Length: 86
Image 1 (cartoon, rainbow, N blue to C red):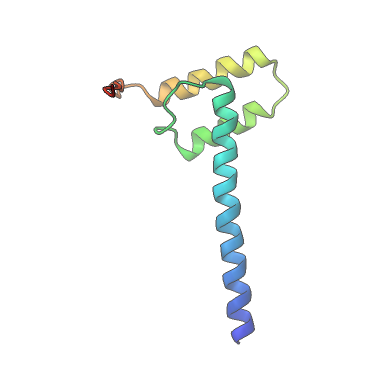
Image 2 (image 1 turned 90 degrees about the vertical axis):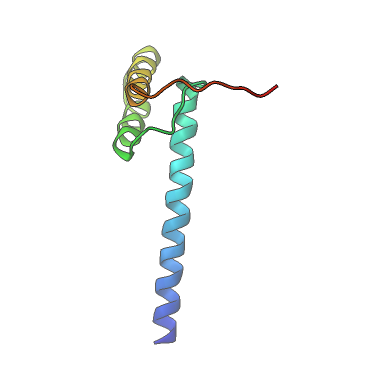
């Protein structure tokens, strides 16, 4: 019984680490095309669509335009951020 709990715990931990790494990889992929855009409003669905576009067969220009459109639509209605640091 103890072994089964350990096995389940290990599997859950591995899944959590994998999901965190995958999320970071997707954000790095997005940053390749839109380095200065705010990504905080992207939904899981947006990130999945971007991931499919990034690894799809389209040209770099088509990928850039499609990814920029998704990111910009996610930021519509949100006030622009202003950096007030000196």
